[in-house]
Image 1: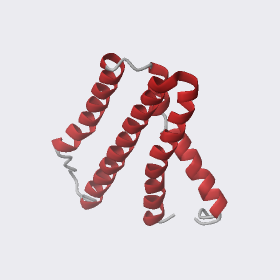
Image 2: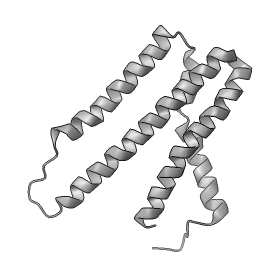
Image 3: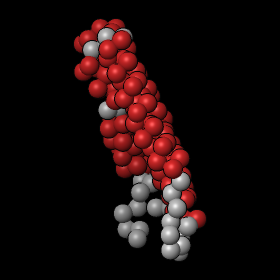
Image 4: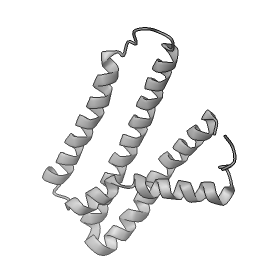
Length: 138
């Protein structure tokens, strides 16, 4: 698999998260009502944002590592650490506000936060159905 293939996979997963979040919100409205649907939708939005930030952060760290290949001392800027932990802090604060201030039910929010799991499964099915992945490549 070359880098452009992995980038395409990541882009599709990033696309599938909000689509599946919407489907999950519709299903949640049947079980938990409009507040449950709102919880799933907000959770899926946080899931998408987390995936996007994590993807960009990982790409930055990989590029940083590649640019310092062969160096005896590798320098990781503090901003990289700040962005990683800042991402987690912002997501925790957003989840806290959703649960405590908006008083949305916790289970639908958690289901929305986990929207990346079905997005990855859909991507796997897409790869298998289209034959993009060749198992015999080394």
